[in-house]
Image 1 (cartoon, helix red, strand yellow):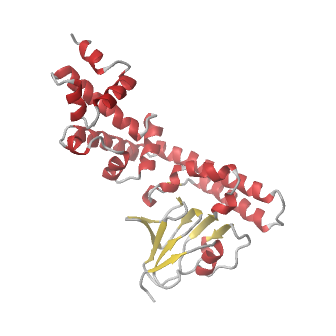
Image 2 (cartoon, helix red, strand yellow):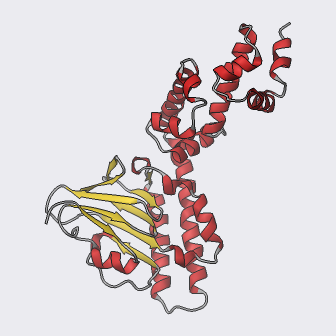
Length: 306
């Protein structure tokens, strides 16, 4: 059977069984060595929907991963993150055995129940990054990640006691915090591509506010900007916060205020007319935002030129 096979997996045991792995040592958390997954079940293409968090460190993978319409080839050591319910599609180009190496951590949300991580894990924005926004690791960073994966595996393989869950939770949190640090490093070290995105963002905003789109559709949303730049919303905001200290929403507002000041100082349009031209349904909302950003009202700004 070589067609696309879709699988909704309910438990970590189901995943182990599907991938022809031995029974997991723990029902709610598992560390898997990718070299133990030799072949995909049911042919060359498989689509998975999993109800748990997954963190993968992969290298040398002779297949393609796809989230939505985005693909990535795993030729180097990179990390990807998936939250429960995301769809993962894997395509293998040949019938050869998979040659990937690395680690996969699976964590069922039930394992986090009644812990601080149950809430805080939703604050790690990279769980919603697109696959082409994966984290590229240095050799030193790979060693750190591998060590933590091994610590988690050793802990649940040992005799389970009242400390086990707390220790494993602490290791997972450590892994997520290191990943946060490594993403921050990636935004900085990949300055060329990051600043290209920043420049494209400015062009997109400039074109938007100079066109009729703003009158028809209102203010641009973060999702619209991210889609135009072909990046995920959270990745874009994370990158911008690292480079400029401002989120995507703040960049949109800053461009808006820049355009408002231009109209206030060079035209005779009323404040209400300017508000409507900039996509506001209610002029009061425009005036409130302008004052919050510029520290004076639109009329006070205009009168400063008298």
